[in-house]
Length: 141
Image 1 (cartoon, one colour):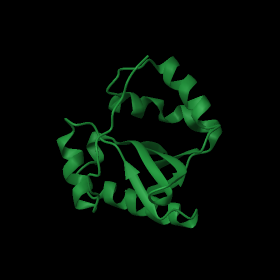
Image 2 (tube, rainbow, N blue to C red):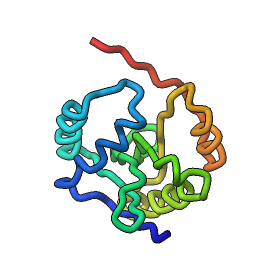
Image 3 (cartoon, helix red, strand yellow):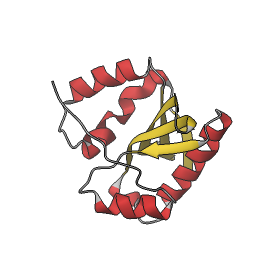
């Protein structure tokens, strides 16, 4: 397998919608996800992807910002790798590529949220050296 890690062109953002729908806890429609991604790419957002030859097999959003407690940081978001590619070290390779990329943009930390019931991701991120700093709260209007 020949994997390619790269930042997706903004014009190709809809390519990731099928993968994000598989991850999507909130079961959002394709149309709504496309609308939101179209807005996201106009903000401090980039999308890292994994290709196996021509097939898109992984995705991670990258939100760049500066926070008072850590400085310039990136929040990785909606990380997803197709089931057939899990458990083979691809996630670790992908994160290592992301770490190197965001360092070139001046980031000194990486942050993320993961769903409470997503136990496999917790183990993965612990093994990557992430620590739990708090809770993520959400209030809908």
